Length: 331
Image: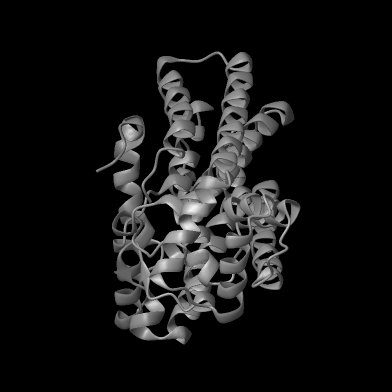
């Protein structure tokens, strides 16, 4: 079921679902079967939704609306396909991953196919600024993934290290999704900056909260076990904050996991309890709320510049509601 704030773009999202497959179809039936599996897994479609809502807010309804909304989802999806291979993941949104069914080669090549389709759709806009933004986005995402590999199994991962990863891994695509309607509408630099800030700050709030779920979430709703990040060698913000408290019990458990790559049910329970007791979760939630408010501040600046129609006000309200939604998810 779609969130209530998607109502104003409900029809657009329904059209987008068909376009996501349509733009990718190949003469190869087995390939199309893989692509159908990928996009039938659903998901929140939050990145294309942000693009569509920002398009509505800035009053853009041109021929490139669905192609670029698809680009926002394609870049995200292709990165997940590659991530699943790197992490050797077998589940994504409670469904088997492409690599677990068809193998790593198919997953990587499917990701490449989706990236290439995204590039073709970008080029059709003939907007060098838009193309450059998305190209920089893909480059930055890859660079951040490489940097995250350098940080694997390192207990001394710093907050600045973590923020660098989040900036490239998540926030940059949120930023591009929010900002690119401005290129299609030929908006001012000032307005473009506010749209970009909305996406960037929302992306930070989204990822920080996502990392909190790994220490507090419900495994069934998450679609994966809790503490997955740590078992993959990733030290994220709730744990970074908690380790700063110099809790010896927590330090011993974390060191053991990072050394052995596994954790007993008993130690997992102790780990989750200590992360809460050390204040790591609370501090992380507070920072996510800080970024969420910064995103709302950017919307307020946009509202000061634009003379809003009723339809634009609906988009503004939906974008505002998303800043709360990203902090109240179960997965």
